[in-house]
Image (cartoon, rainbow over all chains, first blue to last red; front, top):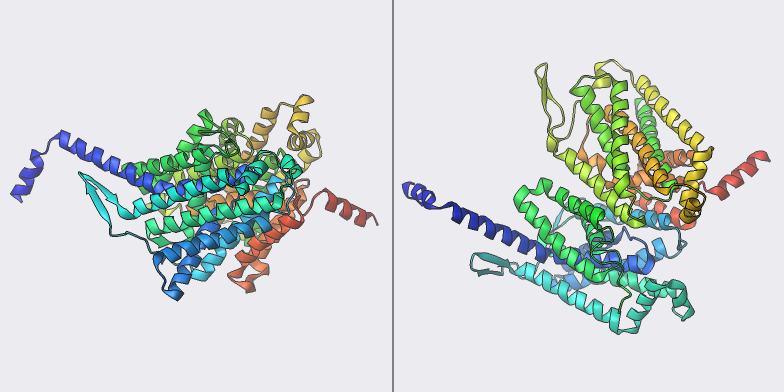
Length: 311
Length: 296
């Protein structure tokens, strides 16, 4: 005991300060890695906004629902974890398509309120089905590389977060390839830029938009599965915070801008984790909201303006 | 009997909440901030009656004023952003207010027991009505007096020049500003008026339920607030009332036998309603049909 007392009294203020710096850097780093999931959700929102000028409030719901189905399938078939992720992503893709057909397709283009309300209704629906199916109790979600933990000096790097970040990176690269190097992507960008002209060129609006929603759904499913994998637990209560954070990321990045969503997602992830470390979980989200307000006052168009149609 | 009075109270409060969103929705601005103003009104009125031992009427009116002023302050920066960004901004605002009250701890000792908002534990013991011997019927009448007054004011606004101005801004901002309407003034006014009404209904809500928990003030409440006018149609005050009765009656009483499936049906109903009647249940067309039926 005396030894311990002697040990701590020998530590200088400098060492305590360095310890804090390391801890804060660690928190920010972990947050940025986790922020890749926010980036994916942000990209999904921004894709739909770019294509239709509307927000899909049911988006995060579809993403988490996909994760649940993936989990259910894995419980029935005892399949490898990658399979769970793949199923989640595919189911969310399908749900994205369904959401488009039920909430956006038949509502007149100029009527933003009705489409928004319909997607809110869809959100309620998805949320309640999940709650009913799982009886409200959270469920464990498998993650890959959970035991992997590297140390570089005083910093620790979680293997599972690296994996999450990597998947996010791959998804984004594939998306950008599809968007800018394929005809489908060109059609999507054409509809986003000017709907009438796109139709005049022979592009079927409804077909293109449903594909956009499906792609967004795919990204959402990946994000949902990655979020669940990183946290380790899946519960319907994450849907609303995920929606809100996704919206904040989209707005900060600039509505309609994919690079904006990516940067904003990573930034919000790091920012959030920093305040989690410094102020605790009760106040953490208040700072994220405050960040949004600062952006809205000083830079209402976000980091980048609508660039989804820029080559 | 008490159960039905409770239901009537809930309908009254939600009608006021819906009407608070109604005015701003007419100008075409989709704001989910009503939950935030509602929360501010609730906590303010409750703090005034519980900690400062005010009478209910000045407490509720003070809550109304505070919410209105907050709406005014929020309106200026918020209405600078367009369309869907306003949705996000107001969602964020409501969440911020909710988290603020989640962390609020203001305990006061009175007559041996502790009262006041207790941070994460919520705000219980808002016992003004029971402490002062109000019967349930008196509470309902008190509440609904305010509801009728608010409905009357909004009805008057709809049928006067202010209603026309609001609708003009909602339909076409460019045309409205070309005839000399100051868009910012109108939008901020609509937001302030909405704030007043939301604060009033919040103050009444706090005393009706006697205990406040941050779970009641989430974005869900904000979406309910805009759901009522959108479902009811933005051209008529009674549309909102009918929507409230329909939804609350449906959720609470009508489909009680469906148990947990109610919320699923609710979500489904909204999706269907928006697909078939995007302008609301009581849009211009429907009202025209009803008027013709009445004449015949």
